Image 1 (cartoon, rainbow, N blue to C red):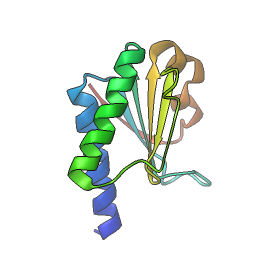
Image 2 (spheres, helix red, strand yellow):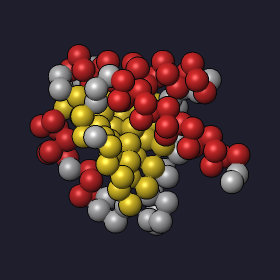
Image 3 (tube, rainbow, N blue to C red):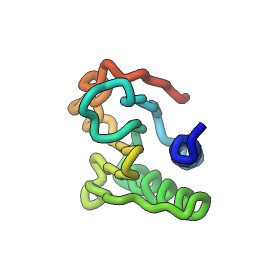
Image 4 (cartoon, rainbow, N blue to C red):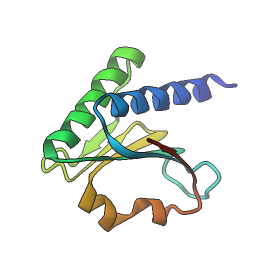
Length: 120
């Protein structure tokens, strides 16, 4: 296993743990590596129940990844209204949605060819 693969696996595990600790809902990991012309290797998608919850999940991810892996997102979008926060860690992109926004954009269907793992 390459060093980069280990780093990506550690990043995914750390993000999933942060989401779980803040009680993120309906978390999914989409493996995009087998799909041509993707912007990253993985999407992590979860739902927050309110603006405050979405922000709490985003903050928890940043704090946990920074502390455990000394890494920070390359780019973050959507923190102003917290309907959909996107956190770009280059190989892993995290999408934190409110329920209605997640249903509307339905990213899982757009990337239907991805191998999907669901977390309770």
